[in-house]
Length: 281
Image 1 (cartoon, rainbow, N blue to C red):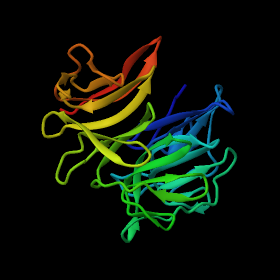
Image 2: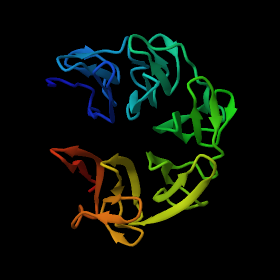
Image 3: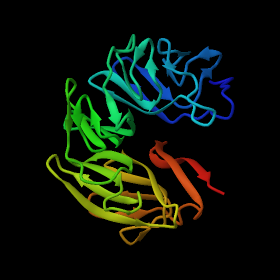
């Protein structure tokens, strides 16, 4: 499907989402071309060919080691929301957070700030018919919001997030919004908490070495999968991959090596399958 993807060493797909209404797959990452298309960090695939999303995202380079890139994509109210590292979406100024309406980039500037700098957000999910955004920012849309905010399609709202800046994953599961990140001052990012629409509650900690972290969370077949680099969750040995059914934690055999990080999981041929593993050494 892909015969060329030049962009120095940056050729990853960070995120993908399917628009089920229009049967389009969107893919984002730190790439600038795909199959000779100047896609600028994001592309779409209709089952036959890849195409660009207008003029893509600019600038082409934020720096040699920080290329323009998409970190997360999600469909909300039939529009594509994109977070990452960029300044413009098409011809519109929309730093690090933009919206594609299916035919063009919208003229939105969400005024996404962290002090005097532009805010960053790597994680999104839909919960109670609102879009939740987690990252490192102190305001969005003119509303003060401590690293977490929700969007009803018109206005942004604070969700009174009480923790520190690190948010490494979020997922909507069984009526609650779960997050991985810091839950006490000075704690690592390998902790879990949840939001019930009113308040935040610390949940369980994760054990691992000094580099332990949660890369992501995903719901597959009524199970919440948590993955990254860690040894155990709530006393259950899981080595990088665990699943929770609402009552109990499960590990998967011996998991992966102690120095490996699981980057993603997916359901393939009826079974949850590790689709990407990277060894840190």
